[in-house]
Length: 152
Image (tube, rainbow, N blue to C red):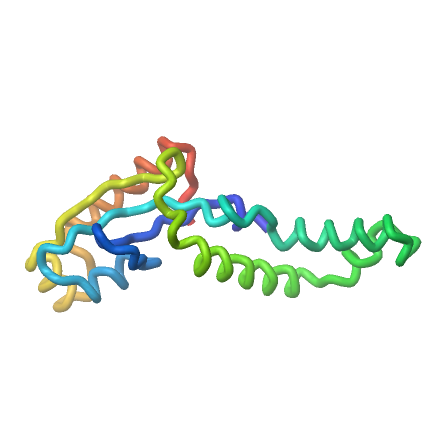
């Protein structure tokens, strides 16, 4: 599972802790004059284990404690689909319990932008972002790459 080592770009309004997973969600919910920040967040900064690591640890425990004679007995019983489900649960835990940890300076990209009425009007008419927001999002992505972060 690679998702635990990737970084997701989140969007939040300045001066609040409310975070949006997509720019689309934010613009849909925004008001003129809101200031938006993009935050690049490493999901597992405070939740270090991936699904694969948890399963490996469980497998090692069973083998070392003598519950099984095969060193990959448990690993062999777990399907890729089950690992994927567990990873989604871990992602959900990290997302909902680390909200106060988003702003870790060396792991974060902050590029604020003020939302204009034209952005909202254009979005409401077309369900697409204005050129200004598209360019801003491009800048966010470039900045996150410079900090060796990978956007999903």
